[in-house]
Image (cartoon, rainbow, N blue to C red; front, side):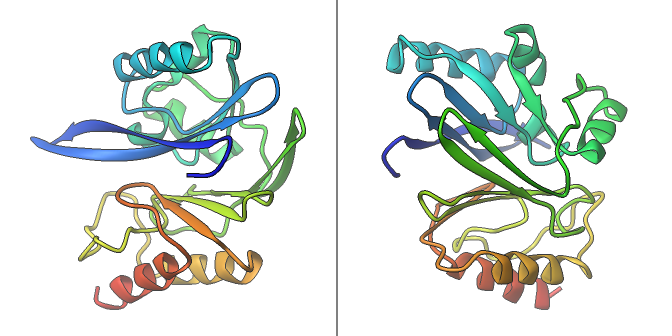
Length: 210
């Protein structure tokens, strides 16, 4: 995808349907950073086995979860058991705990900047959309936006209402993201193929059809 940035995809089963979900792996000079966990702890363990083969001298030290659904936070127990710092907003931490997941740190503000081993990472909460707590992750070095489930892939044909979504607020949240981050080269959605900033417009267009 980019040098030192990899997208990974795991498959979850929801109501009998197999659903792929995307996350990111960021490589720094000494360590790895994970953006969102796989669907559950079993898949997360499988991911770590692959990472050990691919990066034998590097370990995941930090993770960021973008909202409190199982396709983002389902493997958090595995991360915490490995001593990984799992960052989130306070709202995501609260919602994750309410839903029976281990609690992430809840240490991120609605706009936060992190620097991990020389890699700059920005976290932005644009308001309610797919969920009450959805954030996006911006990698300024690569002009890459991890939109998570706030952003839909171009092959998505309709927005399926999910419990806890805020369809009326959703377009405004995307507009805030679009205004904040200029010259986006790569957008990684929560599900489906990555693309460019057309994914933001596409998602707004789908929401207009609701």
